[in-house]
Amino acid sequence: MATFRLATRGSTLAMIQARLAVEALAGRYPEHEFILVPLATHGDRQPRLRLADSPREGVFVKDLEQALLDGRAELAVHSAKDLPTLPTPGLVLAGFLERADARDVLIARPPSTLAQLPPGSRLGTGSPRRAAQIAAIRPDLRAVEIRGNVDTRLRRLAEGAVDALILAAAGLERLGRLGEAHELLPFEVMLPAPGQGALAIQGVVGTEAAELAAGIDHRDTSRAVRAERLLLRSLGGGCLSAVGAYAVVAGDELVLDAVVLGDGGGRVLRARARGVDDAEVVRQVTATLDAAGSVRLLRPPAAAGPLTGLRVMVTRSDDQAASLIRALEAEGATTVACPVIAIEPIDVGAGRLAALDGYDWVVFTSANGVDQLLAQLQRADRVFPIHIKVAAIGPQTAARLRDRGLDPALVPARFIAEELADALAAAMTPHARILLARAAGARDVLPDRLREAGGRVDVLELYRAVPPAGLGQRLAENLDRVDMITFTSSSTVAHFADAIDRPLPGRVAIACIGPITAQTARDRGMRVDIIAQEYTTRGLVEAIVRSRTPISA
Image (cartoon, rainbow, N blue to C red):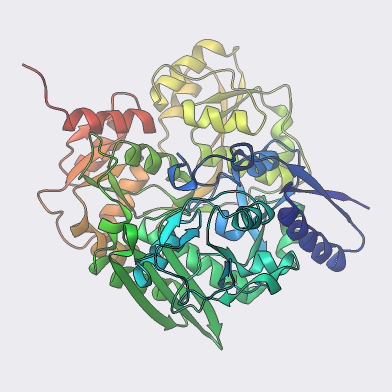
């Protein structure tokens, strides 16, 4: 019998919800044991923190994710509505339990419906989405920030701190307290947060635990929640945005409703679409809301920075884009995520993995290479040999190695293949055996230089960077919305150039992470305006900021 640990928040409701996951897993896999590991999250440790003012998404999630990454748990159970918009590299939302009632409810003292609340009543909620939707139909009510678990909120209501509360029906139902609600708010009045009412089970990519969670996935719930999350991501919002979305599966079709609201409910944008292609349904809803001005509502100009007003396209793959998006938005930019590459793993086979023991060095040229090699080793029930030294091309690849328990022995001063080759040639012993873990089709400058220096080099191609389906159409839809396009590798340049069918607008600037990427862009006929001096996400953002900062006389 194998034991699998499920990380969860330690609140009463979270524990009840996590036990639902344990029961589902134990019922499906009686040969295994599933136990709970309660943890305190950032949101739990900061009970006075206003969620709308939180500097990051996922205040109830990140600590559970870290437990997965550092091996303290094999699975984590989340309320799907709390999940950050962008996925966490190395982790996967493996399964969803069947969704409970996704509606919100009103509880009032004295008992009342929303329509019956007296003008000026104080309505307790910590959600911008709820506050804005209520303000849209009852602007005479006053939203009051309230935090804490259900018991705490109900106690505050009984004490008179507020006159009414809005809570999720699913949480009350799981606590056995739904009977205390005075009104179930219909979707026409209150669309839920994306994922509300659903429980997500997260695991590490490629693990047995993630496969077990996938085995209890409720297909319709998974389809609906993934569409809602994709919509939120497409709009550029986050789990704390004033966005409501609800999808249902009707036969083969997905029906998706969405609302985007301005602060105070002064503007309300609604859209609906249905169809058998979920991505197309999301695209239609996004296009309708974008055309109505959703970007201005979701990205208010309050947080001014040096990049305020700049609309930047991020072309990195989905699992690599998050850090660049966050860094740009922290400087005030509006980002448009349009990944031009997707990662397609290459199975290298058990023989190549078994031969790993014979190398002195393994060289990684990307975080994707780290993820892919370690995932294949894990699936083969093998571990990375402790005697092998590891080299990383730059700090982001080095950070991924450290996250996975490997400490790089070498990171060059400049983060390009030529510099890495020179640094490793100086550090290695004569005739050292070197394995280069990389993408298919990468430049051969690194293995060629290492061989010239006396190294015995083998190349292990672990993945391909391929263009995502429908790339040309997405680029056509987004090019006129942006002022700048960022490229972080030659692959992003090549796939972008292959997918567009018209010249770039002259007003659109091109920013590249380094000289190799910039040269590829020039070779494809692009005018390069910005090249980072430090070949990292941070360096790219700093270069963009410098380009927008006037030089003092």
